[in-house]
Amino acid sequence: MPGRNEWETARQWGAKYGDLVYIKNLGTGYLFLNSYEDAIELFEKRGSVYSSRPQTTMLDLEGWSDWFTSVIPYGDNLRRARQYFNRIFQRSVTKNYYDVQTQSIHKLLYKLVQDPDHYRHHIRQAAAEAIIKIAYGYEILENDPAVDVIDTGIRSVSDALAFYLVNAVPVPTPSMLSKLTELYGRGDNETFIAQTVAVAFGAGGDTTVSALLTFLLAMVLFPDAMKKGHEELDRVIGKHALPSFEDRPRLPYIEAICKECLRWQAITPLAVPHLAEKDDIFKGYFIPAGTVLYGNVWAMLRDPKRYPDPDKFIPDRWLPAYGEEPPLEADKMAFGFGRRICPGRFFAENSIFIGVASILATFNIEKAVDEHGVPITPTEDYLSSIVRHPKPFKCKITPRSDASVLAVRQATKQL
Image 1 (cartoon, rainbow, N blue to C red):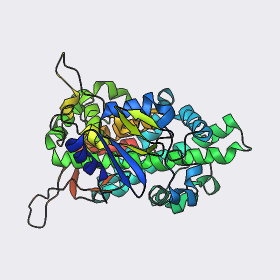
Image 2: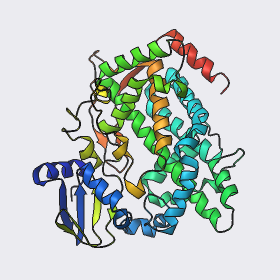
Image 3: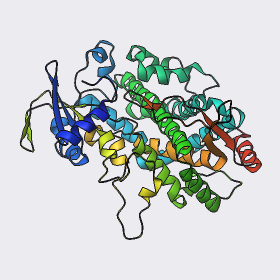
Image 4: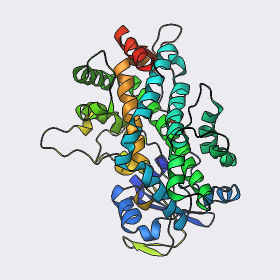
């Protein structure tokens, strides 16, 4: 098995051997699906066979397999967890979170005005602030240790207990946790509800951070996209205001930037593996029970037949000329498949939109310069993990005008 960037290795295998690539390692079979159509056929149409997760010894030993929704096997616990998630994250309900998401982004803008060099920290703080407020009703403080739970919890299963903020964080206002507890009671459900909410807290924050960091990198490397975004924002909302969710239908290019962020650098390039629970035949090939299947989102979103010049950041691809069909939406792949599709995808897309629109309305994002005044071109290197983040890179983030700064100060005056 490749040691890092397995998604790119699997994509290259697919180009050489075909979309279905099967390998065996230490007695376990692995099947990489490099095409969207194959992923839909197996993970959605044959979901009764391919909706479970493979057993992972470390996750079992540290207790995650019993409760962390992304990795628990298919069965009653998963159905119950997804019922809870859908109750609070279905598309119609996520509108209730607009104010919290907007406020956290406005605070982010203020911090970027004051201290742009630490943009990674500020984005991380903003993402955590929104999800913790919604999940627990808890207002985090600057450098709040609760924010560290997102990083440590996602990256180290040994810190699983740290997700149970219900024991350490007060719940003074209505929240996801309090609503689910009220709806489904305490008793045997109490712990499971707390665990379900913890998944939203951990995974939701990391996804938003990854997407917004990718957005900043794209603006530095592809300044024409930033210029077009500025032009649309200035035309639609003016130069003296911040965007809102109500502006979204009138900002198609900003929406296209968001979609391209999801496509250009897949957040979860191999998603979470699926498990074949019984023998199956697909396209004439035998898939034995116990095979671990990966939907190679990276390869699907870089298919040159569907997305010409896939290595380039081209938001215009989502705005085809009149009469032409747009390409397959990135969110069809970016958030998983079938019965394991991410239930928080609508919330995540909302967070990405308001973040991208607000940052673009307020700032220029450009290459930093070295001590000799030479522009520094960042690489497209990413940290190799389930949830990818670009490696730290230098950039220059400056307010577009004094009016932009004034709009931010007015928006954060009462926060």
